[in-house]
Length: 164
Image (tube, rainbow, N blue to C red; front, side, top):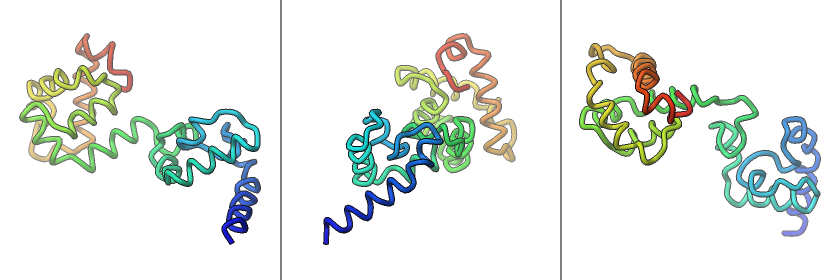
């Protein structure tokens, strides 16, 4: 029975191989398996497909644009940043006020800043809090635009944060 399931899954994977190849991926598509195994031979792609299946990350990778799935155009870095800010807006506002926190470090990473800069990033947001949140009605998008604008004017962040 297990062999039958494996053969059906393999057949389905190969049936949709042209879709993956058209997007610039191997037959297994994007995801961790596709990133790890670049060789586009059948046994290699079965291994990549198996890794994607075992890890269960391919669907998330396609919708979030991670694990080499960004070429599909589902989510760009800017969209990912905006989605994150909208989902974590209240927590980010609090962490920016105190100058640190897990979500603030994640935002720094989404903006392409190095992990070594997370502390400086937090200090920057704390010092510019009034500029980032000009009114009580400041939207997540307005705050993100103000943050990116401020970071791009700061020489240290402008050169090191790659996704501003």
